[in-house]
Length: 408
Ligand code: SF4
Image: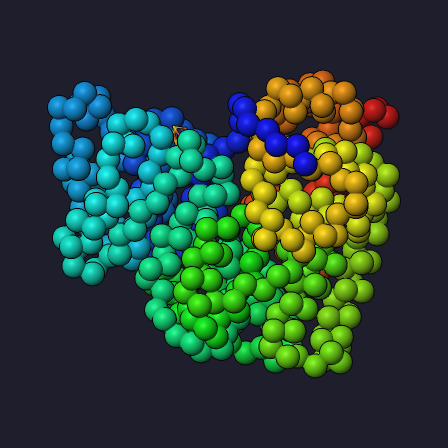
């Protein structure tokens, strides 16, 4: 295991607003930040802020930065204006960022003050998406953690899927669990921000995303049991993920087999054409999304790729245990980032494909190294046996493209 700490090339936690606001249409994410934050959100989401989607930026103006205005008053005014224009908002997230003037603002106090003023009409929560504290997927972890105190307590037996999934993927999972006989299945984050699942001793947590360490710990403190499983990427991971739930709810083995075998079979068939492209190719995963270890497991075991190095921004051994156990024994892991050293290793290894953040993709492509943007994997519906072919295709596509370009 290589541990590195140096310059990072990773988006900040604000980026996760892009998928969270889609998941909870009745929530609004108000970034308290600078113009840089506004530009990031605008370009990452591909929409204009003035078109008023379900997020916005409270930009502190020159006056506020010079300390001439009370930033708290300014924030309250902005929130009031926003809620008057958007009465459908049920949960308002105040999202902190890293400009020093914002760090000085106590957003927890601001949320408390606004909650009192709004008298239960809108719930105001706060969390940090600052680039100093978070990488881009940790923004979701912080947002879910902020919701946790609002979750009611109940010891009812239930399966709780934690982590944002595409709605269609979630519907398919629910159908499969229903066919397995697991009837009470809830999700965090929910589709409606006010539809919060209860949590307690009867809750079995199945993480759908590998970057939710703080949320997982907090759920355990509320009495929930964390199920250990590989993440549901690829056929094997998805099957084992489902098996963890089936075991926890004592689903008979024959029933599990009857429901899952056709899905496994179909998933494997969908993988075949992409495996032909990927098998034997050398892959270097740079640390970015914290999805690298489960993806490496899928790409090596099911697609035949050779792993040069598997980087992760932060290694949570408990949350990664099942995936780590399935990696080839001599896999080189690295935790943290020192971008220059990592790029030197990439250049020396000349892999066929590099999984990396947007900022590194263009320079590497210019050097003749094919890349895959890791952020795309967070936005794409890649979970489940049914999506295994699509997931493999995302990695095969840049290699196919390069092969075509070299032929022409
Ligand atoms: Fe940049 Fe910090 Fe704003 Fe993120 S939170 S966009 S890193 S200034």
